Amino acid sequence: MVPDISANADPYTGYNVFVHGRQEVIGGTSAVAPLYAGLFAAFGRKLGLVTPRLWLNQTCFNDITSGDNGYFRARIGPDPCTGIGTPIADKLGTLFDALGKSPAGTVPPARGRRRNAKAV
Image (cartoon, rainbow, N blue to C red; front, side, top):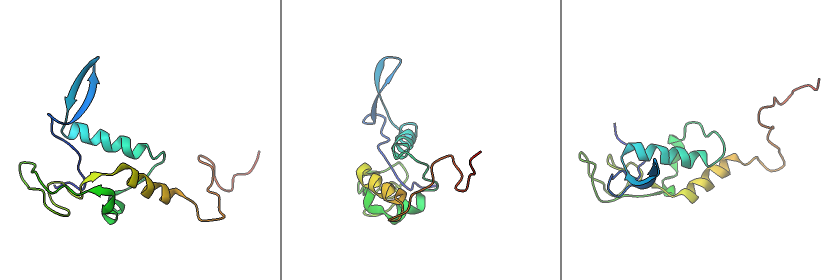
């Protein structure tokens, strides 16, 4: 398997977190998966399968062109080391915000209610 997307997974330069009151730097997939989960959750709605949309919008990512993961080397463009790159959060936010907007003149149904619900 190769990645679709990437983030800093180096355990020495990863993410500053607090564990039991102590600051630590962590990395690896144990840090990257929650990063993306938090980023996508911040958009405030279910996104469904995002992979195809991400590949169609590669400008929402920083292309990683150097380094390796022990098996593959990064290069220009999508590669088996870093996929399409690291997220540019504001561009992804704009992409997914635009998807949530209703066409002009329409109002989306309220969450948790059926469109044709009858008053009781």
